[in-house]
Length: 103
Image 1: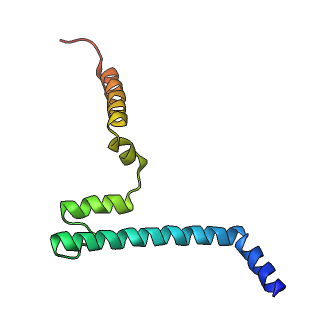
Image 2 (image 1 turned 90 degrees about the vertical axis):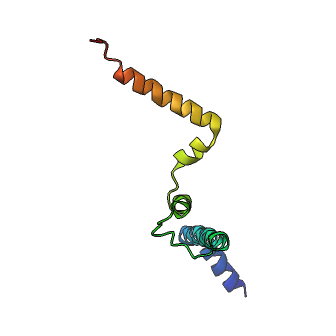
Image 3 (image 1 turned 120 degrees about the vertical axis):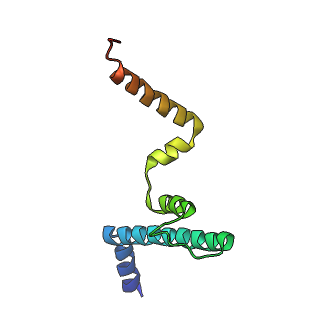
C-alpha cells in the first residue's frame, strides 16, 4: 500500500498533472457557463441558441461573454474606469488632430 501512495503522490505533484488538472478545471467551468446560458436563453426566448454562430443580438452578446475574454470589457464595465479611459483616449485624439491653421 505504501508504494501506491508514494507513486500517486509523485504523480499528483508533477507539473504535467497540475497543468492537466488546471486545463480540465477551466474546460469544466466553460462547459458549465455554456450550459447555463443555453438553458437560460431557452427558458426566456423559447428556442435553443447557437452561440458558435450567433444571429440575434442576444446571442452575439452571450457569444462575446463566453468566447471573448478581453480585459478591456471588464475595465469599461466600471463607470469610473470607463470615464478615465475615454478621457485619456479623447485627450490623445485631440492632441493628434490639433494641427493649427484654420483657414
